[in-house]
Image (cartoon, rainbow, N blue to C red; front, side, top):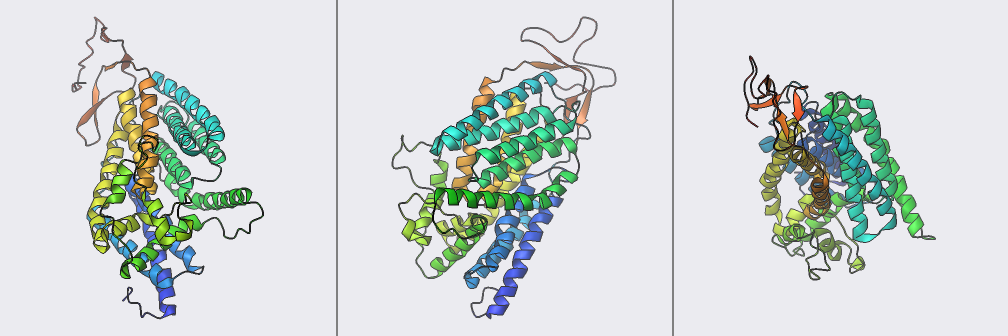
Length: 456
């Protein structure tokens, strides 16, 4: 009945309001519920759903829009998302360990200073460079802020207030240097820092503050966006609130549905996914590199802006529709379900791993970058692979530059949650250099009374 084009206008308006409100509340509920005190990948993706579908529907309802196509877009987005949740995301991630994972304080101190240097260099570069170099500098700033947060909040002996304040300062610095463009990047950085803070604080208060706190941040970014647009187009009559880019992807998805019904939409049969897979190849190396999904949308939705460098968005649902038609929205359910679930498990396991050196850091930071980048995936694969790919590339470079020491563990071991893995007792960690032994002649390093041995 909701998809019937003969529904009266009043009924369509009411249905749009109900579905938008349901999407907003459902996404926020899953974000709050999933993962307990931690910020999970499933929770982040559902928060993005609440914003780009629930809030977007309410915002578009208040303006002039095609209510029939908007209603159809909301129906397909909402019921497809709820189905994905029922099939793949109702299971909670592995339980957290009863205590904090052991860490190497000296390694975390080095990590903090390296993160500060990377973030400061990225802030300077973002003000000097434009184009792809600017995007690269923003990715470096993202990684630098993340490393500082991990270094400061990873050690339980340090007061968490300092780490939280510096994390907030890193986010504020990114807001200033972003020039109000790239709000998805700022949202991903905010989620990355929240993952680290929630891992340390272990309270739902962190997640609770995000919901009301996102409102003033969103309004502030909207005002900054409008100021930047006016500065770039002096004398032009600029209308809007700055929130159009948050809500327009849902409207574009509805427009694609109308084009598909009329037979005007030529399906790409996976071409945009291939474009996303090779998105990090420089165009100078590959001049004929395929364009991303956003560029492909412009001739369809805004032909007057073709060849102007403009890019559009129509949600991840729109990309599946563009590639495979309505059957693509069915195929999307298992694919997105598995991908987000895999990211969630990866983050849970990496968070439980002791931060004892470069390899543990690489796993944890990679998991955080992927999970925090899921709002980009809600816009399409090209946006996700470009932004998350650049951040991971910067992370790998920093990872190679970080000096590491081999760590040997001694003393009794304790089980790590229900995972069956073992962890050393905090305070019994001794760094050694290669070729030397951590054990003293008086006491072997591999055993203790009453403890179970774990090989590392």
